Image 1 (cartoon, helix red, strand yellow):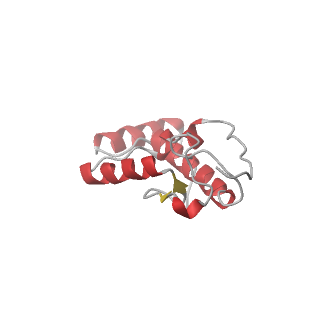
Image 2 (cartoon, one colour):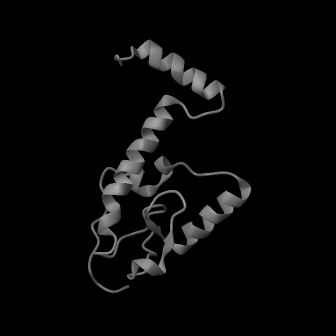
Image 3 (cartoon, rainbow, N blue to C red):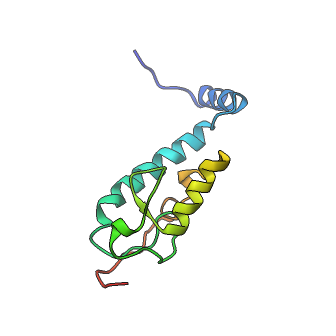
Length: 116
């Protein structure tokens, strides 16, 4: 049986997670929220011209498959961000999904169906 955790228990667990070298409870929640937002956006990518969900720049090619497939989520990102993710993998560091432009903004710009 599960039960609701008290705020004190969540805080203690979060501190233990950080001490063990993991993300805090708040960071895990932010990552899950970002992943959910990215997942809702992904099916729309092929319908319109959008900015890159990672950096927010309008550098995406109109043909989504000409862009880079992210190594962090099933979504296309611009070529520059694709290269940045490859370098992060090389050096063993990752930018959290919560730092992506799409995750930080309340509203995401609506694209248009015109060619780049």
